[in-house]
Length: 286
Image (cartoon, rainbow, N blue to C red; front, side):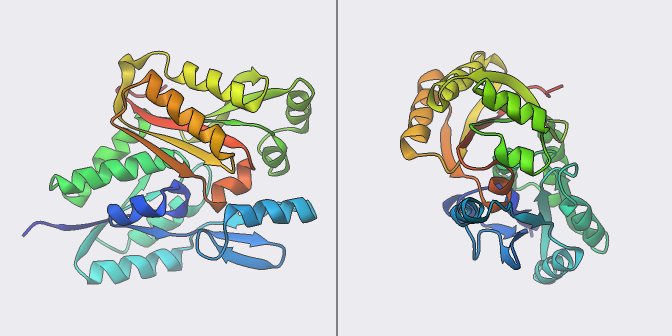
């Protein structure tokens, strides 16, 4: 009998409901605190509620990792049902979720934790790859090992229209935020080796900046795996992300171009009007 493999992740991978259901993925949500109330990411709160709260109070939400007890309960439930589990988490440099999962997993023989070294659909790319590997009959250990290697090839980046959330969340300095606003700069944020860093800086309207950014990202297709690409946004207007989808399709023959919206945890840090394209390269990124 072939091994029963369950693919799971925390809620930061930002896959939409359709992709989660189609691929039989289980999600463990992080917590989001607004004022005196704590909510469950993607269950009883959505990003629009976060933006509304911020506009009313000026207060950013606080996010908290999935705790060890929740992971232990989850692993216990599904291993008792005969599953081996491959669990994906947000980069260990960005949250204690990964370390909590590893502590919980240490009590089980058939639970494997993959540090995506990424966030949002950067991790989502690994999740979907894992589901494909499961469909090919690979066992949980092999899937975890292959996806751990694949993590170094994920090209994740996004452009932020306004640095206010990143600044107030302590992820960029006041000087950087002030300079960007003064000069009308919109920086690209890239994820490398599990951490966020500033990439190319663009100037102009958000829509025109996104066009330049996408053209830069897809300027050389020779090192890009054309299986799939995510266009992931946080609260952008439909005409903005639809234009980005059209441009991606014009520039590169991806087999799948998938649109997703960032969930509460990611939106809490980047704010409204953020958009990125995320895909896998053929060779590891430095």
